[in-house]
Image (tube, rainbow over all chains, first blue to last red; front, side, top):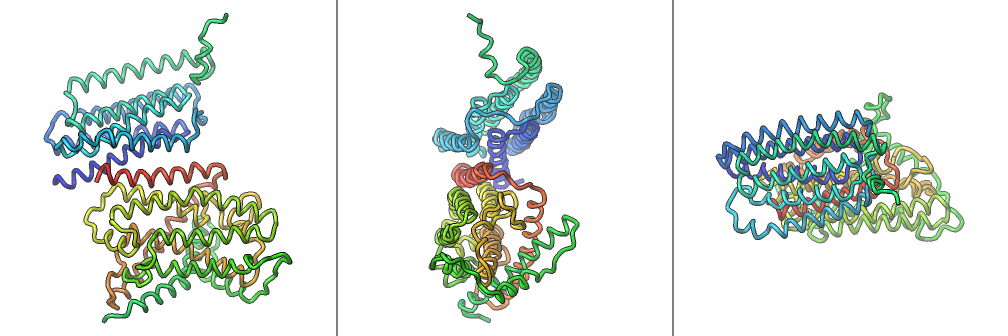
Length: 221
Length: 314
């Protein structure tokens, strides 16, 4: 595979990651959200493997396999179980309506493009152009956490943000040290378990996973 | 053998006029197959048009010149658009006079007059249809322009001939901007031609119809012209999509043989597009009218992402 083609495929994957990030922001249904999240993880894993091949960085293969097993299979599976068990499949409430959220997302993409433009000029890596997309994915994850009221969707937003960070690391410096990535993966796994437990507690206490209900945690006076 | 570009132009308009009803018939036919019904003949739209031309025109008493003038204008605009879009060859005299922005404006003129004609008689349905049509148009047109700009960024020109030429020469297939623009274009084309997720072309169901509501008062040759024009509009959007995203096979010279050969290629592509359209139409349910903002909002999103990814990734 030559450099030109690899960089083109990588750009296309970056575009797909951005697309799934937008999909996550605007999608209403829970199951579709999980599918989109799994796809995003898959594109990320493929992109990481390609960058590892082009840059000759072996560690990235391990990182790619980690992404594939964690973000494509394990986490969506855990979240899916959770959704089935808690019987959440109805449409998700949003704070801001969907078209407005889309426009905000576009603004965020332009902002991150502007922010990464100087780095792009300095960098010599094949992946330098995808840095803007990576930052935009992080921002969109943020946006998702802000605009959604539901606890599970906020977690998916958080995980999407983590995808973006991983993508940023690969595109800016050919990946983080392997130890760090292993640590992050482990943290995510444990986080997923803790989230699961919290969801159970929240839903048994409030009969809902709407985070607005948390206001009721205040003491009565 | 070299033929004069003017003849190509005439051939294009001829194809537009006489293949468009067959294309509409083909879409209807495939749709019937998919739904397990007996399909009408491929030539049924021609018979419908002929029948309508033979009938008398019934005009409302208070119909003004706008109402009578609109069918001719809509028809004329469609024919004119057929001269701009490279259907057979990119070497078109008219293509130099009008670029893709002018093309969008042409469609806008037709829509403006149809909406006026819908309100002209003063029936409730006409007004409702016009109001809905303009709502959709106000969302679809910016998205359409954005999608077109994404393609013209790649080809560095807004002339359709130039765009088709550059894209067919382009060596890289994997351009994210073009992929995004294509998705946006498909969504917009579905909205603009009144296909299923936005409008249902097959029924006259009062509460959901959009385009049909505006032309409800037309009859006879006026209705024939409008129906013919709406078939041409479907055809035009298809060939516009082909010219901007899949221009392989469109002749790039005045050579008689290559122009001649581009015709079967065109028919093949039309067949594929018809199949794809039917797959979309049978796979999706018609949307609630208030969801259309989201539908066209996502078209705008895709188009903008296309433009942005040109700067970011290419």
